[in-house]
Image (cartoon, rainbow, N blue to C red; front, side):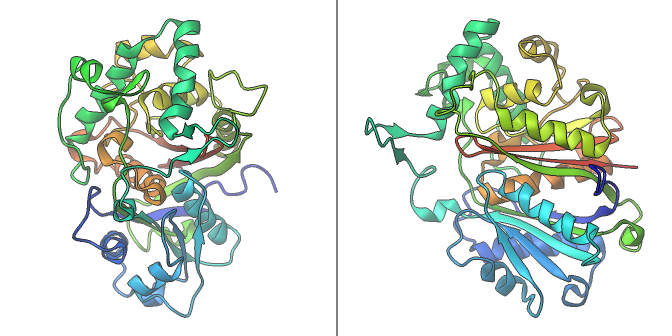
Length: 385
């Protein structure tokens, strides 16, 4: 089969998302139910036990596996599967759901991404120790290794990264389900306490709790659910070598980003992403991660991101708005939920339902996750027709 084997065969017919944050008064089941039943209502499904044929879940921190989702939704006597793929977990669960319908196995499935890391009692991901030097290895440490090299090569600086954080905080104030709703300034970012140079506090996304859900159906059946279904144009996952151990890594880009983007654009029939993509949600676990994504995904030439940041290209009123809901910076990062939350936002944008953060007439929307060291990238592209 060709690269376009999935294109337009599957549609998003319903989306849901619970409020993200430190959800101390909710269990994982509570969040799953909130997101899934909003997606059912969005799709006009009154009896999910009769309409949902299979469930694909994504979670990194669950202790109960797929049973946690099946039990919460009382979806028994059908396959319920779980995916775990670092920060690309939600996108990978979506991919399995799309493939199951495109193959002809099912007509309608549910995809749920969720995680509740705050119950783990730690403030961030597990800190691993280097086996040789016995030093701690953290996500901030991995991603900050790119900064000095990038700054030296292309003349960017902390102010360029700060403008990304300011943009995402602003967009987050317009998203009802976001966690952080506070405007910040470049000075706030530059004067915040240092986490791992050049990342200060506002350059880093926090872990939060959250869940998001998507109902998928065969495209020829989609208008039986709602009048404005959104087409799946492409979805892919790419794995790469550990950049800390890869002698060919230049720390100026992430290899899985480029590989996944090339595959996704070929699947979707996109030849010029900077003009054909109308809105994007990209992984902004750190401000530099978003800057590198602009370039790795072909939104601008290598080394030119700071000029486009200064021009406002990626702001809500710009040529290619990025992280219109505030991204990980405003929502936090419940790992398994993030990729599905991005599809929720892109679906609203394509249907013109994003209210105060709505961008002008997007026809193609991209979501992107980068996870591991980073060693995994997931990309999904949706379109209106």
